[in-house]
Image 1 (tube, rainbow, N blue to C red):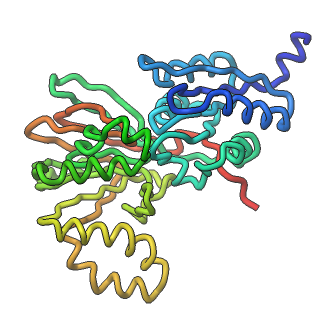
Image 2: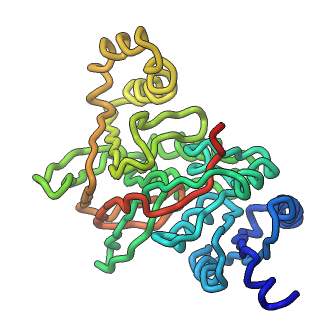
Image 3: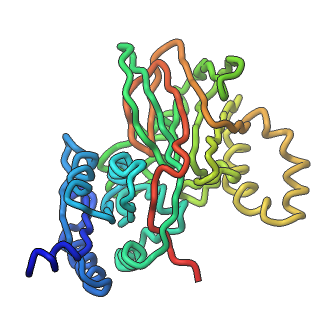
Length: 330
């Protein structure tokens, strides 16, 4: 191959987590899809415990990659997205692992590797928002992370921290349900201070508070049905159940009302009648930025990854900060 021929070929990188994916199967599927797509040089980059994908993505960009495939779980996808933030290269998803949160919200299959590869090489390109969390840890040090779906403080973060790794490998997202049932009996309300768009600081006692870029979760859960991934806004869900009955009301809302009833005019009328009862258990806020503070250190999670205990976190939106491959329209 001449230098001119090599320079004309597109470079596509595959950043893969060898623990989360069947590497041989991924390699075969990607090579087949790349061969059908045309003149492509594939660059394979393996993640590690020390570097979950950010460094590999920078390496891919340095090599001239215009498309980066993230093959792994939500942690791998988030790491690659951080590396691609505000870059011209495009992210494509080969979902694996427990949640596949971004893939679910973009309508990308998480059950067929071949279909995911077809989308990666032949889908449309869409600009989406990135959430940005600047975390202040218990020592006062700060660090910044991007997130794609949602971040949580309170029982949801404790649940993720308590998820049994072996059960997670066997049952997938259902392992979080096990962790949730174990966390509920010992859970306590968290006193959170929050400031929306630089306004007045308010406080609330919450079981959990979630800051979202989009709102769908596994298990047919529409936690925040009005959240859009490209509107430049953050959606905040404040969960304040007073009893087990309160949790059941929330569960009914996110699995039935938000997902089914709200899609019809009759269902919307029913929701207006019943919504007052659940509003004190689950409420929604929206803004371009939000700051959360806690008196005592609390566990924190981003896109299903436990990030340890924090004392404060500032959220902003990088509007249109990521280009991602999605299913072609028409």
